[in-house]
Every structure is written in structure tokens, then in C-alpha cells.
Length: 451
Ligand code: HEM
Image (cartoon, rainbow, N blue to C red):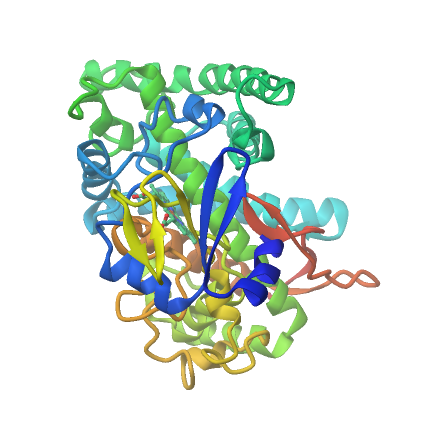
């Protein structure tokens, strides 16, 4: 990732890299990103060949994010959009967020009492993961099981992040060792999630009469309910392998991205108390010091929205979108792009570019209220100035839900507590890559109750 930053300076907006057996075409300029993902959207909408490790976790590309551009992808994505993130479903699931937020606040208070401060990332990950487990399986499960699911999820993400052995011929010892470890982890993932799949199936098949106390969402409200009946072309009915994989995809895609955003946002609120005070005042003005913050309330808080957008700009959770591939040989920026190459879009550069953003390294939410961020289209369709969710056909289908999680958690945490640095231990802004770009030394902060 950081190598690409340097190579960009040397080789310009598009260049090729050879990684073992694969050709990577790296694209770094806003104009070429827009040309490929928006103007030539359907051509660049596919995904490249997967390594055997990744194929294991996607059961042969049976996820929305890994499927090639074609009928399987269309069926899975359409189902996800209509079943999981249509506005009525988001409203129907708001009790899940309420329940998870209450647990979140209790956990923060407990950790603060016990240790004198709180760790932001781990708490936010756990809360968002618990929301997504409930959205997927309709189940309210114990914190111990959520922690287990979350730990496996983290291992799967680290395992499936592209690494050197993925690009090596399959007979090398390094590769074989990695595949062995991947198979063990896949077994663990199945052991952890299959019981939930079976419990939910029994609940649905009994018409809700199976009195399992964990099953709390009504039939039809959980993502997996829609998958039980789905028969994608060429795949037929989905088996337990596919069901585990598709639900894990939601948890993988939605947890770290949102938790990372919260960690960076709070870092800036801790370092810049003026911004935090301004946000607190907006919250108090909207709902009062102790008022309930509803999902409709956060949508109306313009300063909160500006802080979150500035966090997406300054710290995009992923510096590249997922790997793309062209559906056929094509041309881009004077280069021939073969259909079997990985096309990698380095989107973080756009938000670091001083010709696009004034003082790009400064964290200044106000730019989204008055200045160079006003009217910025985060979907990139009218031109790319920032694209935390990607752009075009493969844009994140859950950007509204992801943003809602971030808005709600941030507003609740700032309404309840003043966040300050741990004495003699100022936060360290060094970044590191762990699926998303996180703080190398996770943020810890002292929380002071507001009332
Ligand atoms: C702050 C939160 C989030 C951010 C920043 C984010 C960002 C992204 C990005 C950059 C991509 C890749 C786009 C591309 O390849 O061009 C993506 C894809 C995806 N995201 Fe998100 N995401 C977030 C939350 C979520 C949530 C909550 C879910 C699920 C509930 C989700 C589900 C997906 C899926 C299924 C894809 C694959 C789309 C496809 O290939 O067609 N994301 N997201």
C-alpha cells in the first residue's frame, strides 16, 4: 500500500506490477478511476481469479463481493439490496441497534471503571458485529458467542488478505502451509456458525413455533431467511457452506470498515476538543442532554455528518477498493488491460491530492459545510473527489447502513461522555494495515460522564 504511494510519484496514474504469476494494473488518478468504474462501468465490473485460500472461504466465489460480473452476482446482490437494506427493513431492525447500543454503553462504563480508560476499536467491533449477527440470523446470542464469532471473523479477514504465497505456484511449501492453516480456520468458522444456521432453519420451518429463545426476529426479517429459498442460476439451492459464507460476508464487510471509521473519528475528537464541543452542542440542541437519539435525529445532524465525511476522506477504511477485473480485453489510459489481470484502484490518493483538496492532511469537518467538501458526491458518479465506498456497479451496497452505524454510535458516545486523552499517553496516529487501515496502537481514551 505504502509502496504504491511511492510508485505513483515515479510511474504516474497507471502502471503495471508483476506479483508472482499475476499481473496487477494499478490505477491512481481520479480521472482514470472515474473513466474505468463509472464511464466504462460494466466493463470493469468483474473480479479477478481468486487464490485457492480465498476460494475456500468464498466456496468457489459464491459471495457478492467475489462473484464475477454475471447472473450469480446479480441474484445475490439484488437479494441483499431488497432483503437487507431496503428502508423498511432498516426501520424494522432498529430495535437491534438500540439493544446493541445499550450493551455498548454498559460495556464502556464497566471498562472505564475497571481500567480507567476504554479501547475504542475493540468495543466498536464487538457492538457492530453483534448487530450484524442479529441482522443475519435473527438471533440475540450471548456475548461469549459473539466474541467467538468476532475472533474467527478477524482471523478469516487476515487469512484472506492477499499475501505473497497467494501469487506463488501452488506446489511451493510456503503455499501448502498457508492452505493447511486456511482449511483449519474454515473448519472452525463452520463449527461456529452452522449451529446458528440450523437453529434458524428449524425456527423458520416450524413457522416460528420452535420456542428457541435466541430466535428473536420474526420470520422473514433475518437475512438468512431470504437465502433459504434462493436458487441462483447454476448453483441451485444453497447448502450450509454457502449460507455460512454469505452471512460471514456481511459480518466481514460491515464490521471493521465501520469500527475503523469510529476509531479515527474519535481520535480527532480527542485531539481537537473544539470539534468535540461543537458536536456535543449539536447533539444537545437536537435531543437534549439525556434525550434518546433516534435514527431520524442523526440524519439531521449536519455537523455530525461533516465529521464522519471528513473521517472517510482523511482515513478511508480501505486505501484500495476490492480488486476488479475487466470482462474483456480493453483499453485505459493508453494501456491495454487484459481480461485476466487484477485491476487495482488506489483510491486513497485522490483524497491526499492537494490539487483536489485544500490542506488535505488537515482534519477539518467544516470543509463539508462551507468549502471544498460542499456538494461532494461520495458515490463518485459525477466525478471522483473521495470514494470510501467505491464507485459504479460494485459500489458498496450497504453504504447507508454502514454510515448509520457510525453516526449512531458516535452521537451516543459523545452525548454520554467527554472523550479525552489518557494522561501521559497521547494518541499515536501511526497507521497500519489489518484488512482496513487502522491505528497501529489502538486508541485508548478516558471517558468523563457528562452528567
Ligand atoms: C463504513 C462502512 C463501510 C465502508 C467504508 C465500505 C466500503 C466498501 C468498499 C470500498 C467496497 C468495495 C467496492 C469495490 O470493489 O469497488 C465495498 C463492497 C461491499 N460492501 Fe461495504 N463498506 C461499508 C459497510 C458495509 C456494510 C455494513 C455491509 C453489509 C451489511 C457491506 C457490504 C458490502 C458488500 C456485500 C460489498 C461487495 C459489493 C460487490 O462486489 O458488488 N459494507 N464496501
